[in-house]
Length: 556
Image 1 (cartoon, rainbow, N blue to C red):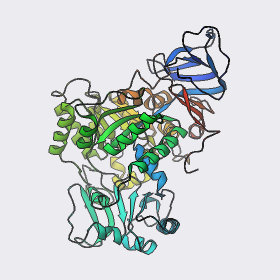
Image 2 (tube, helix red, strand yellow):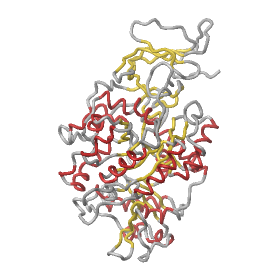
Image 3 (cartoon, rainbow, N blue to C red):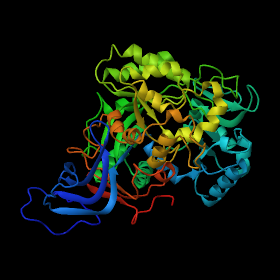
Image 4 (cartoon, helix red, strand yellow):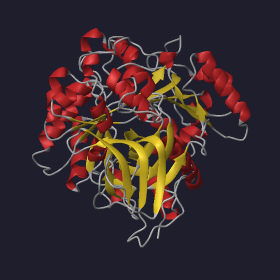
């Protein structure tokens, strides 16, 4: 019989319990009720199967149980769901060079050189996180500049959004990327001059030219990365994640963890394209495995690139680069073929769409296909960052889910203003408008693009301000959401977006006991204080899986 373990579990047994239930009391609890309102509770009774048996409120008689967790007056809330993340990417990022904090090209090059010197045994120097928009230069870096930092080994560095990569000359040579190499469909090779020598940055599908020659991680590398990723997610209070773009090798790593009893977070997986979808799921979505900890839901597809690398597909030219409207990774015909392949076997379809043209075209595809592929499809639009206001009402049709990332708004706002100009911002990061139109929201982080910190996301969602409190009053504050809506988008609505409602997402009878002890009342804290919430302990299925007093987040 599995025992539920906590720091303050009483070892004494009471008389003749029917099951080894656990009482969690002396807490100030908050969860969502069936109507989306807040239910304040004072205790939980967790069954031996890790599900909630009873929710206690002030004045209720406490039942006799085999075990007790004394909350010591702490605040307790549901475990949070990251509805768009790259789980293995979070772990791999923790194993490689992180450039996300560099604030100039010179600082980035110094960090790269130092990292290479500290790791002389690595045949490739790999990393991620650079963002030219945070540098004074405001331009893409070059291979020649990277050669000066690392002349003796190939280097490949992902941009912060994963939609561009920076290579040195050795990496370009190994990949045979030359002046004669043509831009692939849905991608672009940045060049020193039009039609000339590659400059060192490859955008969207062009990245594959180098990625295919980078040594693939071994199974043991993936297992180590996944262990790191789980620690990182749990340390932020994330107990479940939608893994966007799962490969077959990554799925096998998840399964190995499940078989070994080390799978701690819940993963709703979306195969990285239809080939991985079929390899993992076969005839359809998998069943829930390991006590609701792992399921293949569907497939992740792409419409376009990202705004930062000017790969997002826009209806009109970029304000700061009028020669381009971005890139379409998948054509309309290809998209419908891929969606049909997935929908035939009832795989859920999640499609990356950032620009207003990409979103409009995807919405048209969903509208055309919905009469054929009937039933509970829960079409997902991943990011939905820039949407023509005329298209927002279309999200209310067919139960379309807008899977959005609040911190993208605070990170991207200055860049978005430059890329779009003031006339096209009305449908940017339009959370409240999505809900008003009848669309459904699910919030996430896009980690490792952003930190997998849902409390920063909650703060951004209700205030439209960044960690620095800017801009005063919020950026387009009419698109903020209520605190209840923000919490729902990180819990119950996130579960619904992944076909997990009734399994986890709320602290109610029958659902898994995934909960957090935190250091403040999230319903009363100011946005700036909410973003600083400390997660003290994390329980998944009633079992303690993270204790900040004992565990250390990787990288700290």
